[in-house]
Image (cartoon, rainbow, N blue to C red; front, side, top):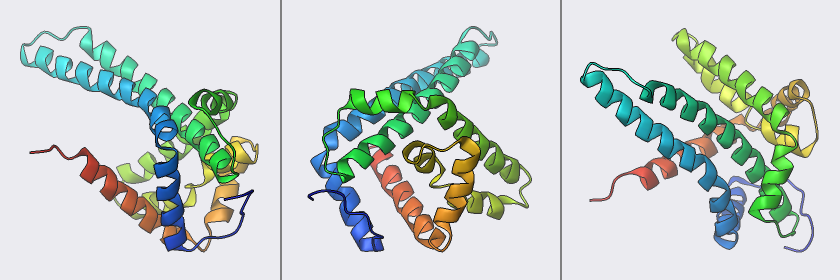
Length: 195
């Protein structure tokens, strides 16, 4: 692609473009997501240690270790989400980007990124806890699917990004739902243990 091609894509074009970007820039995109996965591993190991301590009837430091690694994971994941957003934006515009450059740009907006992430998370969890409002929780995921890209790429505040996401997703939430569903299926298949 030469230069920026900014136009709506069909569902097939969107999938094709996504796989093309991942294939051509695999190491950059995987490298960005390696950092939160290291914290996810630490969180998993501390959870196993915590379960063993509870079975032996002696809770110890693993409980504290689990919660520290849990919050570090979410901080790292938010940073990685921002770095991925910047990286894909640069790739789409035909520019080269490194893992370091993507993280440096995300770091400059980390405060707003965390505000958006926790605001959306609290809304979704609040609806899901009531059980009756679970369908609304699913809708909120679709409403705010573009909040982080809006925050980062349009240089908006957290509140403006949430409003902008609702506007941008209007009329295409069914497509966003299918994309999220396909991403979930791919993640599930990739994560399945091999025989």
